[in-house]
Length: 122
Image (cartoon, rainbow, N blue to C red; front, side, top):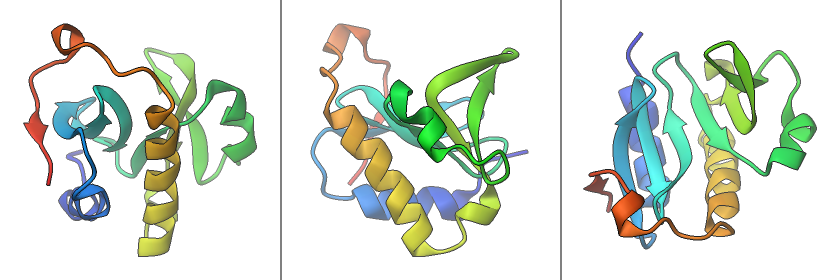
């Protein structure tokens, strides 16, 4: 499944004008990075991937619309998969993008040597 281009455009619009935002294809989707850290992505499996504080993972998980991201069979604390049904409205997308952006802004920026090549948003 390809990522939802309309969802990616909605994310792009929400992050437009924010400093240090770049886009990069990752996980079969389109990721939006802030200071080199992935904040949110239009997932290749549909819906969103959102980064949150690892200790907050259980706060958001409801096992229906919000699940922990699983990579190679392993649950990734601090990463959430948001079902497409939970991204239908602008308000829903805005809330998840805001959460992901706020969390990664609290992290140290990755040094330019550790960043992958990406395209600026804005």
